[in-house]
Amino acid sequence: MSDAAPDNGSHAHRWLRRAVLLPYFWLLLFFLAPFLIILKISVADPVIAQPPFTALLAWGADGFRGIQATFENYVFLFQDGYYGIIYLSSLKMAAIGTLLCLLLGYPMAYYIARQAPARRNVLLLAVILPFWISFLLRVYAWIGLLNNRGVINEMLIGLGIIDQPIQMLYNDFAVYLGIVYSYLPFMILPLYANLERHDHDLLDAAADLGARRWRGFVDVTLPLSVPGIVGGCLLVFIPAVGEFTIPALLGGADTLMIGRVLWDEFFVSRDWPVASAVSVVLLLLLVAPILWFQRIQAREQEAGR
Amino acid sequence: MNRRSLFLVSIVAFGYALLYVPIVSVVIYSFNDSRLVTLWGGFSLRWYAGLLSDRELLSAALLSLRIAVVSATFATALGALVALALHRVSRLRGRLLLSGMITAPLVMPEIITGLSLLFLFISMADLIGWPMSRGATTITIAHITFSMAYVVVVVRSRLAAMDESLEEAAMDLGGRPVAVFFDITVPMLLPALISGWLLAFTLSLDDLVISSFVSGPGATTLPMFIFAKVRLGVTPDINAITTIIIVLVAVAVATAAVLSSRRASASVRGTATSG
Image (cartoon, rainbow over all chains, first blue to last red; front, side, top):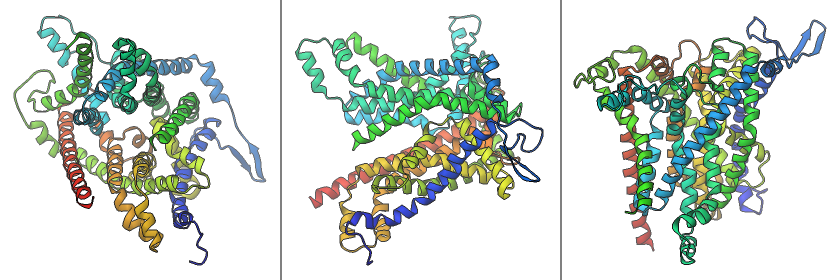
């Protein structure tokens, strides 16, 4: 090739520059455009038609008439206290679920990171393995355990510990359990990746200087693992806020989570503009944690190199 | 063992129990003859036999498999291109937008992805008359879009660890870029491509929320079928389905483990002889 650049890299990558346009346009069309559409529908009025909302750009016989946008759907969301409560309750439930996940996941990641390499791999594999089995089916499995006539209640009654079944299913407790259970690997993996890199010499130095093990942990390990803690928590918290399957299968009628409400708003009441406005607000709530997560990801990529 | 490590070990044991007790209990009760979940009515395979004659279930499973194979293949190809471009092309135009669009699906609430894609398909049908109806095709497009992001993560981490000198050597010897790509880069990336494909396949097979939004009448995937049933409580035939899936996953993981340990030992031997 006569116009080959002197630098080998750019010459080789010319075709890659072209080839990447395909996934690029794919993402523009199927990932970015849909959000613009959701924004658009969220400022439309519901009408009884197909599709059931008004157009953003009004066209008349004489051409373009103007833009018709309404913020009524948003006003509705904020005036109607119901949605405010649901957003707050979703954030609260996701936060508590994340905290519980951290309380269980941290000791597990810490333990795994301190094992011999061969044992470590087996333990890690055991954490990841359930992830490959359908999420839906794993959440379903808890119904059989937590039921009033389920395995746990029958066992407790059989042992004479209780005589009436404890209500464990279809309430907030079951949802927290579902979140911890489903997202535990997402908490453990970033924590493990962080804890595994720790320099044990630091702990030895702390011990040599007379620090007790617990102090060594609090003063050395814990501060060093903060990036892992933040990464794991965001990885659990962000999807948990919009979670649908767990509250739909394990939650009670009074379990308020936005994912489930959005589903009902769309499939049951069929109010598309309100459903769109609900998702836009949900997304706005998640922007800060998502950006935070992306920054951490970028830093980890740098550190990993 | 001192008290402190006993405490740690019991938390760890509790964690693993939490991960595995539900799965084990479903497997056990899938062989239960009684319709009631908690009563043990003796060993039976009746729920498995029942599955075979459930036409609705079988067609849902087939549809899901078809969608998963096609979407995983496209997602792997497209995702690998994105990963390569982000890793290798230093001054890529629109790099920030691309990396944003490829990381966002990892953390996007599924419910929003589903709803927004549905609106896109409706608008497209309105504007250009396609897609005429929603079903397997629209679900496949949706699955490609979100699973691509996971493929990119897997391939990028492999690229970061890869030695590029072999490709540079081939290039210096006058290899054409495309030939070098298929003869050297792709084989070196193969393990990551395979695990990316498997991940995309699993994610597609598992997706309930996004499929429910972008599906149309007549297209029921396996998770949609299962969800409709388990919403009403425990059903023994779903226990049987779960057990079958667990067995398939276990076989796949064991095969992958054996293959990778063989490759690892082969490469150790290779280094030993060449070194």
